[in-house]
Length: 149
Image 1: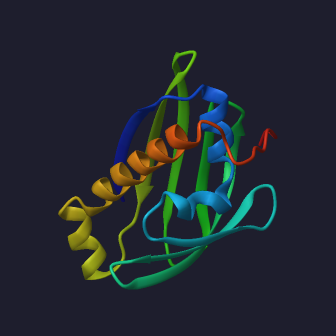
Image 2 (image 1 turned 45 degrees about the vertical axis):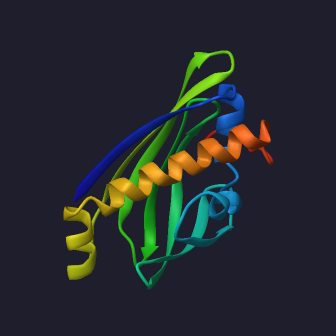
């Protein structure tokens, strides 16, 4: 298993950043390589990704969700093996630190080499940067799910 840990400060309140992160179907708007996500239940999502010309499909289950604090997940079916957590930390009333930690198992030669070359770390960093730009340009979330898992 490989690990990546990245964080970014976003100029929105914690509840705004958290609310947006619960809108999984909007992830393709700021996550490079994510083609689409279908929210099948409160805790199950189906992902279609295309990275480096390789399309992958998998299901991810939300294992923990605490409003304004954290969302944790693990893959349960499909062509990817990963688990992670994103946490939200109040820096100021209008600034949130978003921290993402992920464990993943590269499969095949291309993914293993890409991992060794830091591709996943750069991907996560870029996704967080695009999340920041998306949120700061909008100033508000596209929706919210405030349930707890």
